[in-house]
Length: 617
Image (tube, rainbow, N blue to C red):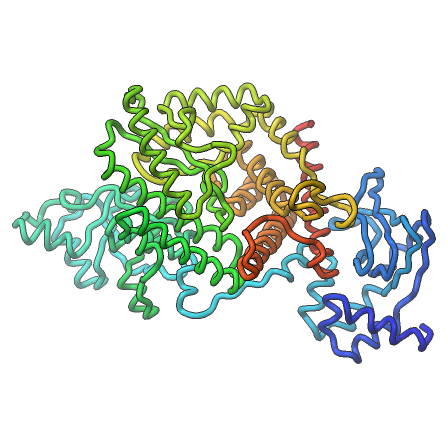
């Protein structure tokens, strides 16, 4: 390169991430190896020999990338980065680059560039050949301080020091093992690897010693049957919520095969980590009025801000916010029963949509419903209508806005007996027309919050039966999700909202998150899977062989990156005193942020094309 041009190239690189993280001497060395290319409008970038791999940076102008079939891959503008290889590979199918305007480009030998930045891992990761690796390099995850314990998985803190005994073992033998063999406070009762019950040292005192029970009797006579359990992949915070909600102190931890792998207790947490369990969740459970509950909404926002500032994984933030949402709902339902009296029949309150998936954020609204016992009368339904009005109004006061589509238990249609809900799923699954499909899409993801879980299981099992291997339904769901395609063009030209207050903004929920949620849901439901969380669904699809490992990594990396982008935007809204929204201003993105987004959009678009072919849409 002409030495007179070197300062100009170096200065330009300093304005672009990740090059702005490099010292001047490294930038000078990189700039000195740059080639300068000029493309007139309508010109195409020459295809280099397969042995050559280049990275290009657009200094000025506009270009577009076209796939071999002529479809748009991406449109790029000033400071956008592309290339790595224009040749066929798993991550980068061959494509052509055409200039839309007169364009000036800097070209760098990709292999030499990686050597130049080898001592700077953060930079080299963001220049990786794999789009998934580039996205992952932009995801910041921090776990620090004592409070981080509550955002870790149960499996990391569960105690394995626990007595496991068959139901026929005598009370005396179990007590001996608890006291002398393991020196622990509880025993789980297991027959044929399935949990039957649990006994604690307090049970021994209250149910055996105090009542003078013959200790030669089997332990099954005094055990707590069907105890509350928790999965090993749940957050420690979930266990704390369960302890407070049900006033229990010993929770068996189950692995993926529903086998006991340990136990978690509050004493153990305090002993190991010197933490006092004083949380918003506990405060909510002690509220006795709507006014008291409403005051807790401010702390809910503070907790979100703390998590977002700590760059916790999006899945963790969603789970914690969902736990708080659950607790608000459960407390309101308990208060409603006090106000209106004992329910006339069994019922269960369910969450739907993102709340059911445990993907809640500060802008989430209400999606809920009521399932009533089949004995419910019209009079009973009127009782539950009043309960629903009380709860939904209370949630609105606590910051959970009413659903604009009215998918709430206050609507008579969504407060029905088990048999009616089963009829709904049967009708939706057999005739996936637009209105029915919209209803089904909302209530495809459901989770029990409060009440008789057996009623929920009847409906949920029927739901799964109706959707599993239902090709007609899945094809309809695919066509529905293909109505929204991720933007592949230059942000300030053709891909943004065009009307209303959010004109020229990027709707990250509709353009990306919704697409990923739909893809994971379709993959999972077609195979009869019951995971709800999007990341868990992607993992399920990989485990079932529906997608390969690389595809799962691409989907997970994309989803995690997009979610972190959304949560960072929500945090910025709060700091600026603005309403929390999903509309992002592209003018706030740096060049590499745009590059990451384009990587993410291309990955989503590719999976949309693949699922379209799979279901023949």
